[in-house]
Image (tube, rainbow, N blue to C red; front, side, top):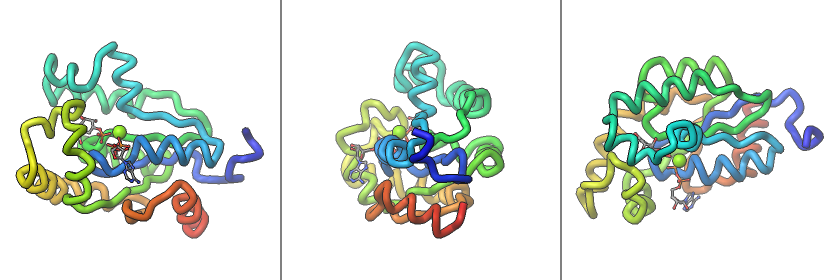
Length: 179
Ligand SMILES: Nc1ncnc2c1ncn2[C@@H]1O[C@H](COP(=O)(O)OP(=O)(O)O)[C@@H](O)[C@H]1O
Ligand SMILES: O=C(O)C1=C[C@@H](OP(=O)(O)O)[C@@H](O)[C@H](O)C1
Ligand SMILES: [Mg+2]
């Protein structure tokens, strides 16, 4: 594996962006391409708690979830090289953008509310914040939440157009940025 790694590369790459932008999907592909470990903080949290995020929200509520995802972010043991997919809300709470930028590089996968909504319409059950929104109301909900979250996401090391983003393209962006 090690010969595949970008020499003196960014170490830890955190993928950030709204629900449905592809952090989990692209993260796995990017890790595979770079020969880095793949870690998804939502999956780590679910394995640790023995329940899904939807179950955790139903049982303990969002405030408890935000505290727990903060612990998971900061207490996880990261290998030297890893691609880490975060949950969509994580960058927008506590000091998480600063923390991730201090511990690695961040990539914001940017997409429009319309595209996000079309990807999420059939994947709302596992995302408790979206469950009660449908059709045009889902687009509006996403647009409003995105406006709120964008200032946090925009502090990423690299801002990438999610529509044309592939693992190859991310690798190229990292090289261009020389990080
Ligand atoms: N580049 C892409 N093009 C089209 N659909 C995608 C792409 N990346 C992810 N998806 C789809 O969008 C949905 C959400 O992807 P996911 O990786 O779970 O996003 P996130 O982790 O950011 O919430 C999934 O159905 C996934 O298959
Ligand atoms: O945006 C959010 O607040 C959330 C995003 C989810 O992760 P994905 O972005 O991978 O869907 C998950 O952490 C939880 O449902 C809350
Ligand atoms: Mg995900």
